[in-house]
Image 1 (cartoon, each protein chain N blue to C red):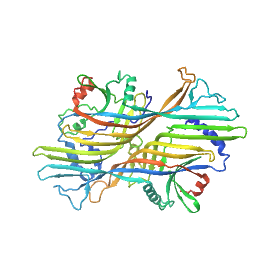
Image 2 (cartoon, helix red, strand yellow):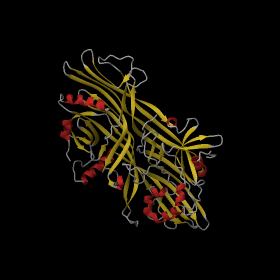
Image 3 (cartoon, chains in turn orange, cyan):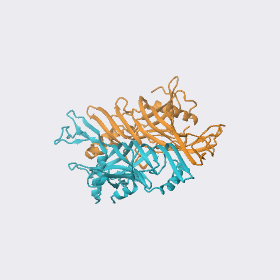
Length: 328
Length: 287
């Protein structure tokens, strides 16, 4: 069990791509040149017809848990190894020549911490009964577009942005919201080095073309972007939350059919440390005779890969009511 | 280093250093392998009809009406990576020092960035060799520093201390490999003219860079000091807002605009060499 693990910040999904992408990306610079026209066009979003979609992505967690372990055989005051043999971090003794000796030795062990370990930890806190069949997915939607649309008759549904567990059933899928425990934020706008919100955390290469002919009512839009910036990932399975911004790269492609962006983010360079107790059993009776508080860490990367895009209402049903989800 | 180990070391250290004629410090050469990424305008500016204006100017976007009456909004930007290595650091250092009226460094020639650690000394310096095999040093802690306020080390260590009461001699064998989150600050020497926004939107010139650090060191009994064997900070990442002047030919309400910049890369420290504290003090150019 990972106790008190911290990687990153409280939940703050920021998949506010859409064309509003530009309002928050380097178009700060654009606004210098075309702020008025830009605002007009992007405030209207005439292409959006209330077609709310959710995109599902497989979340791949590739972390390593590093712990410190004792490497010395425990010795008595004369430097003789005690039986039964047990490990300790340190010994202090006087050797046969009268020299006073202090020795300290510890090593590190590394264990995989991936999706399976996350599932096991969620099982331990009874979020799921068994890990079998569950996968970790990241969902995001295009509800942001509704807020920018001028058609006030469009009812904007609840956003599903977050991390979920998904399990296939005979007739569909079940989704469980675990965003409270696992957070994936490809872009974390709130980072400024001191935990305060202060604007954009990414730079973007973009190429878009929007054509809008009001007379013929023909509209088209295409775009491909890539970004590098700062994202975050957090585990909050038992205890605290922390703040660990890391490098994130992403490619973004506008899916005009579904009116939602396809993304492929990878956050790398994650590292967090947490304290864990290393128990030592001197007499091998199964009970700890000494405990050492030691630092442990998790480090590695987390990425998300596209699975499918489906109707947001179906996804909401599956989340809110535990109904089976026929798609995606 | 664990608290316990540290205590033992301190005890050993304090008694041992008095037996030494010199205090030795480990000097490790630092290599900055950073880049600064920014978004750059990459499309020719066009007029209201979509005709490229001359002289050509790159902009982020154009908004015009084409011949068929369609309103067109187009945009192209690229990510430009600018190297930020020792040379860029030193060049900026020269200009900053000149700007604030100091004359400690007037040229980058011969200077290298080093990290010095040892008894009562720990931090970044630049140094250069002068005649007689001696070195000049400048403390640059105000431009680059580590945040070691939290002891978050994981380590693999092998320590053995032996005290022989018959001749009052003391020896230490110690090798330590550490693994930890790294936090490094850069200040005043960032590329381009810019200001950073920190807590509560207050302006600051400090850039916080986080990364993952590995380093290893061995205790040298003859010098009574740790010698750094090597250090690497990978995935060093930070961001700030650049303040860019608005071109003169654009009508805009302010003189500048801001755009984000991402710093990413590695920072490495080479194997240490020993110097005496006296040689540092003698070669130090005061502020």
